[in-house]
Image (cartoon, rainbow, N blue to C red; front, top):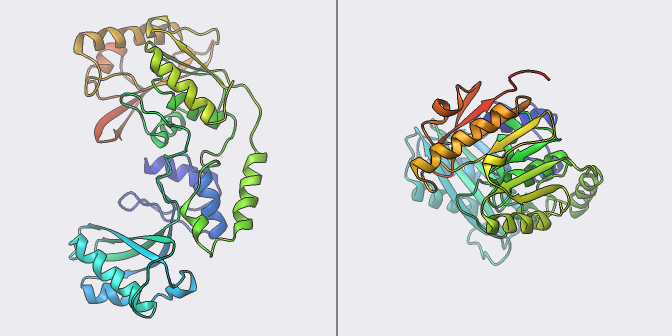
Length: 355
């Protein structure tokens, strides 16, 4: 996923560094943090880097954090929450990392904290004996767009769904998901096609921080709203489960995208299109949480038949089913991805020929 996030940052005009244990560093200001929280489709959180430095002892960790002038950006009554992570470092006891960091923050702010005010969530990460202290500006993880109120079976996260679409090169236009479930992939496609910022309608932690002026947040929301395009992108979501289709329609309404996606009860065996070109991006059953082997063979055979009937379409299929390529043919690209805790492969099939 890091490569996809990095491409998003580059497209937004930043010069990101290499990924470090899932984090991608880049330089920006407070207004950039506001905008990226609202616009990034595949990232999990946006952090502010507060301080960093070498730390192989808890005394060194304490001194690095204690030197920060927290009172410049945190009120005296702030509630401080510290998460911790460690990778290949001498400091690895997470509870001790949390305790020492919080004590250093309190001492830097003059002693005991009342913690009756807004919550400030920090992450102290020690990787390769280097400490980084981060302030979370997002709050809820960015996959929580706010439109998915109901929960279907084996859903994709919104950020993973967006990543799959971007990996196939989807920028708008025709897109079909024949196993749409609760509608995440078609809705994320509609957000991309209409240039709608995915976090436009939700709230973030930074909105409770005085260092982020309210007028900046409102100005950026207004700018992003004005950039939405009123197009009908010919996106369809199909599923054989009527309750899943009803759920998808409810989510589409919650996302404010009514009329941008056509949901319908339809089996994959009927997957066809009047268009010559487009994308089929889907998360079919693969036997871990849904599906039995004989059923899976039938489903993937029907998906293979649809691929043959749509030679001008790009197909993107995320699956943990080991027989995908045996049934559908060798993929043009493969990428290992995790769908929650499940290791999967994302198979990309590009158009066989131009029509």
